[in-house]
Length: 349
Image (cartoon, rainbow, N blue to C red):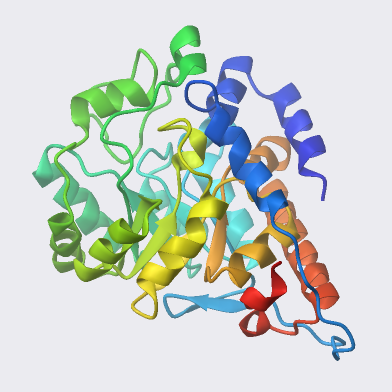
């Protein structure tokens, strides 16, 4: 699986404004580039002479069995990549046997995404609307549609300075909408998410809202956008079931720490009180194994899924995820690990 080649193919298919929206970061994009570079700074110490004739890369996340420790991260506006949007992504993810996190900013309704891959595991990423009644309505729909967890994004009180979007005046094309909100929020214009966030998102969120969402939904709440151990510990104390170490793909605070560098501190702070996940710059099976060795339960990938969707629809998404699975299995064999439970910190220099 050569994701650089796949990305180039996607770039040829996508409108330049869409490609820039998906691929871009904030300000100088230093965090964006450092996310991928950080995984390459770590080196591995493989075992040898282990019986690796049979390797199992499956795992469980919040009690749900998945085929691999690679999950689909929440990303918005999939219909910009493919006419079937998030429905195609859901089918491709289900075919690969793993879990998709559906974005608040999906262009297919959360109910239709669920119907596209019935029985498949899925989580819902939540931006809390300033109108709490609307937020409560969305959460009620999430529960009714059978989603198994809420992913609360906490690193977007305002939108980062995404220069490419501002320069291009990026907006959704005519006829495309944020399907989870019908006509209840202002139309998106200006720079897409910026307009939505400035007019609609609740910037007053605190740790107390983790408990509010847990009580409201009855679902585990995973807090996404944490880069510090003290924040992770506070989130767990407030009732979170897990943490996603994330800097929003380098799209929020530029010069923020790379997720690979933040992960060990968060893992130490969470300890046995919950599960830790990580996204940001994960492009190789060895990146996945390194993340597991640092203590992550699984990783999440976003942009590679969009490149697969753009080039091949549901089949393209499945191919990307199965490519990760093949690379993870190969890396585990070469490290002498026959299951994800055997991957630990001793494998890293």
